[in-house]
Image (cartoon, rainbow over all chains, first blue to last red; front, side, top):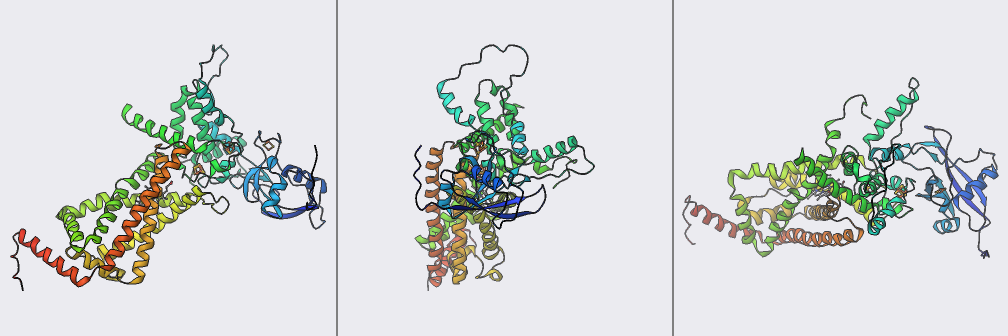
Length: 281
Length: 249
Ligand code: HEM
Ligand code: SF4
Ligand code: SF4
Ligand code: FES
């Protein structure tokens, strides 16, 4: 590959990281001067920071902690606030970020509890998927036989929804989705804590990703066998009614999933569901 | 944070129903009333007599007027506003970080809801219930245009009305768009874009009617309007057999 290094390319990049040593502790800013290379992404910036092992002022510091895995925007683990906007660190290219300003700012997501530095605990995102039963119910040891046929049109409609990587960008940008952070009590077992945390999560908004997954599986020929259970969940506390139509979710989703279409479809399904419940009981 | 051992609150158990009734109340009856109210007021542009006859029509309800007002206007509006404030308190606007058009609309929907609340409370106290202490005087259904014109004369009152009317109209027009998503009327991005034009049209027509009514009321020749209204009142009394038509002077 031929690199065209412009003569105006900077020698180094100033990076500002919001750090936090442990859950519940005060966060603080630290600045790093990272040697510039063409085609860096934010993950390679973080790798260089780890290799440097000192801040801008030369003080030795522990390396910044972050999450990543696939490095190609499919695992969903590297979400963070880059220059104030939620996005995937692996696909955020430094050359583009420098167009936004001279410095790069990295912060952990604000809607999930910080574990350390840029690592957050996104349990609630996965709990939401459980709440809406975002799966096809085919558990069992017997042979289910061949699956039902799905038309190409249905496949085309469903496929984009199936590309969700559970990154949580949509939740981070959603003004209706607010942080729930629970702290384990000293006298509490891990199970008791998780139970209490689940109950707290279940009072909050499920979030656009879960609404969209519910619509995906309600459209699936086998998935729809428990469509009523999903509608029950979507119309209970923290369900579809919590959406305020800010439509940030769809604007920030790295997979361009038509989340607002799913939300409006869920709204329509909830209208029908509520009327059915009123007259069928 | 509430006590998790206790059973969920009434609000929590019926959240979906309450939010849907909230949404509906924005359209019917509160939104429908807003439309009728602004168009009625704009009739002053056709002259004080035209506005007076519409007010007379409303007041022909007689003793039923107050209960109807409470059942179909004040209580639904209080319900909508109460749930509205709860929704506002639970959200976290972030238009600074995500300055997208629909996020701006989300934030404005909340801001205009709060402005509409302050404006409507003041407006009802001033024109409907208490009058002068809230500025400009009280509305007199027998002297519709002249009393409204008197109340709206101070420039500061007129400016606050302009802001209040435009905020309320924006809130209703943009609310129609979100209501369509809430209930699932428009589901695709293209349909939502088309539906935005409904909001624009409703906003322009109602905004025009509201500001037209405001300007129209203020432009009324108070003495002339009073004379017309007094004559209409005399005719009404005569038709009700309470009085005879006064001698032409
Ligand atoms: C003239 C009076 C009012 C009218 C005609 C009106 C109408 C509407 C309509 C049609 C909606 C859309 C509902 C939906 O998206 O499903 C709405 C939403 C809303 N209204 Fe009002 N409203 C009025 C006054 C108020 C007041 C006084 C408040 C209190 C602050 C308020 C707060 C809200 C809020 C927060 C929303 C957004 C809800 C959401 O998107 O989740 N409104 N309104
Ligand atoms: S459309 Fe609904 S779910 Fe999406 S960001 Fe807005 S409020 Fe959140
Ligand atoms: S819907 Fe989009 S933004 Fe939300 S979790 Fe899935 S991939 Fe991420
Ligand atoms: S590392 Fe997998 S999405 Fe970024």
